[in-house]
Image 1 (tube, rainbow over the protein chains, first blue to last red):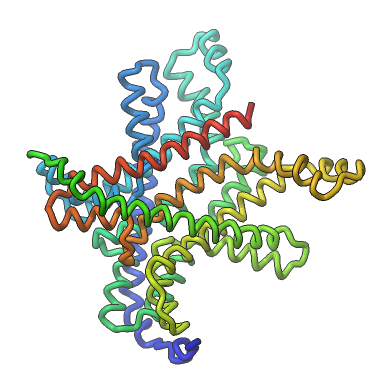
Image 2 (tube, rainbow over the protein chains, first blue to last red; image 1 turned 120 degrees about the vertical axis):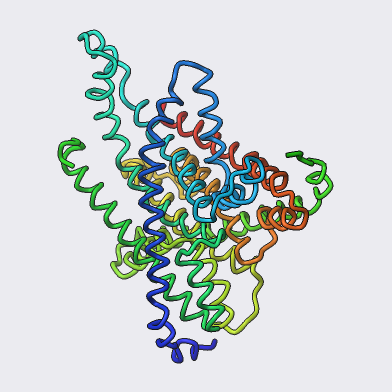
Length: 232
Length: 217
């Protein structure tokens, strides 16, 4: 074994290129936040409602869409978005746009399933009880069903954030300036792959660790309140 | 836009080679995952603090770090540190196997924790032999709890094998990408492999969900 790789660890390279790596990591975090908000919340809730619709014409296309995006790798989706989608539609997208579209749709499919399970987890009697009390449909959904569904949904939803963060590193295949692409560029420029990739791995691990611990803390806090949402 | 789907069938063999490598990577990772995952799970359940903390650290590290970075690290750094040449196939499969081990360890642990301790005590007090105890009491209960998440994780693993295209392993995704680049028929090749992945992954996740529902009832 050649431990000299570690004894001769070149810290100059790291200090010189750390800003570039951090810049890449910031893009990963940005993509994670945007992917979660746009895909995991804004797009996933309507999808979940559509997948539970009583009209087959709405329900089946939604289910097919969700299953297809859940059952193919993000890498293939990203490449498809960047190379095949423009050919089919004539729309030109930048690598960042294609990566973002693929990520948002992928996340929306995952989170749709979570919301679907949450809504299905609310007992049917709750609907019947609210209707028999003369509540309107909107009022029932907003005040009775969603609060209860949210209680079921929050722990797995937080769990997806770490998956999204890990998925953003995959998007580097489209040459968007994330931490992976930054590391690749720097290491081929400096010929110091050990230093650069080790630093990149530790930076990414650190962010992943923070997300995991924050998620666990939120879950714990939420559980201590007896699962009541008001405690959040 | 006219599409030429014949080109996919003409390059059928290359795609099938890619598919074979995808399946091989999955199998190697599952084998490594099961063996190391079992050890990590045993360490995680150990009463010795040092061993337990090591297992917790292992699980945390491999579940929090993006697989893409681990694979690239393994591919570029392991040959330099250990001074031997190793193919992308093996570095990638081992890296994915180590990640799999972390996830499987947690699945195993959840399974063991879900079996009431009274079951073991009852089996012991009835004087059941080791084989009988494991074969008829513990394993059947474990299976019921563990199989749905196991299948679910296998789908994730199958999807993650596509990451090996980043280090030049000619699996399904890279084959299609290269063929697309040579022929400028990205739509046909990429759509074809998307369908192939779907045909592999969807049945697994479907079984997983069916079994989960069966377990609940």
